[in-house]
Length: 270
Ligand SMILES: O=C(O)CCC(=O)CC(=O)O
Image (cartoon, rainbow, N blue to C red):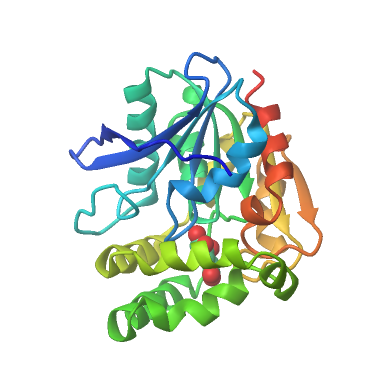
């Protein structure tokens, strides 16, 4: 079991504290910056980090509104989350890094690559999208409002099957329990604002400008960001590769940590 380092803090442009954990060799020039999925935190990456080895430097952040980071009032924007990641790179003195993200974090990684191309050594996109579709603003508002009305626990049954297959849940009850624990610890107003952010996000216009090595992974049974969304990313980002993971659902860094780590190591080579 990897021991997660104590979080450190960077200051975002608006003064919000952004927490991050630094793993591996801080002196390594092979640098990786990671952003978790909705309502998770930096510990989301622990099993990937365990497969990354100690010859890379890895910064895993808590996005604003999540974990130990600040929870300013909304509205939230994916571009702000990307600039928060840039603030973490600044705090570390990193000019560039391979950037990886899962689901919400993948959307943040996309925004980072679009806004900070010179700082993006490579892009790892796991179970994610640039756009959730025309009904997304209403759908995500419904989800956030359910949390407000009935509490985050009312979403757990939905989340569990959205995150993982039945087989995975039976084989890895500890992983599922940890995800639930982190999910339930979220701040409801911040969760609502993050849901709204995802519903309103549309980054499709920026994809053609991404010119860094890009690897896209998606679970074959991902109902949250289905294979068609990953295919749309692959079609729009020149030179990207797409791999569909068999028998996986929405959280491939937890379902396939070794494969995600291999992908990130490759991106961090340059
Ligand atoms: O559950 C969904 O519909 C999507 C969840 C999602 O894509 C956001 C996330 O898990 O970060």
